[in-house]
Each structure stands twice: as C-alpha cells, then as structure tokens.
Length: 110
Image (cartoon, rainbow, N blue to C red):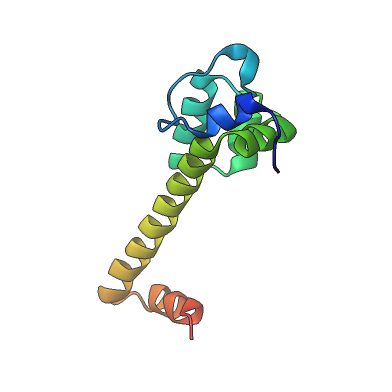
C-alpha cells in the first residue's frame, strides 16, 4: 500500500525495527511491536498474537504497511519458525520417524 506522505518515507529508512517511533506517527507502539515479535517467536500466529496484545488486525496491517523494517522483522521471525520446524522434522526423519519422513517427502518441491 503506497503512501504519499513524506513522514512515511522517513519511516521506511529506519534500519532498526526495534527503534521507537514517536507515538503520533506509529500504529503500534515500540513496546507492543517487541511483544508481538516475541509472541510470534513463541509460536503464535499473527492474529492470535495481535489479539492477545489488544491490537486490531486493521492496526497491525496498517503498521506493517507503513514500516518496512517491522514488516521484514515479522517475516524473518516467521521464516525462522518454518526453518526450525523443517529442521525438527528432518532430524526426526533421520532418526527413523516414518511420519516425519513421509510429511517431508509429501511437501518436497518437485
């Protein structure tokens, strides 16, 4: 979702997703962003994590649309979770767990 506001462009240039923004310019506060990323890391989905923190889906989407660094941090945490799941399944398959092996084989890109 493109924004024509210069302030939004400035937000995109911030290199650190954990750097606090002035309250008037952000949809989700710095503390809530950190808590949200922590809940994602612990295994919750975006909707559940947002709900537990009292963040509406619309506010979360708006914040992610405005802040590239936060959006990338969310995607990174989710990718780490996927990688960890794959690693766990792979190790289980190597140890003889046929269900894990079958699951991995069924998901293999052909």
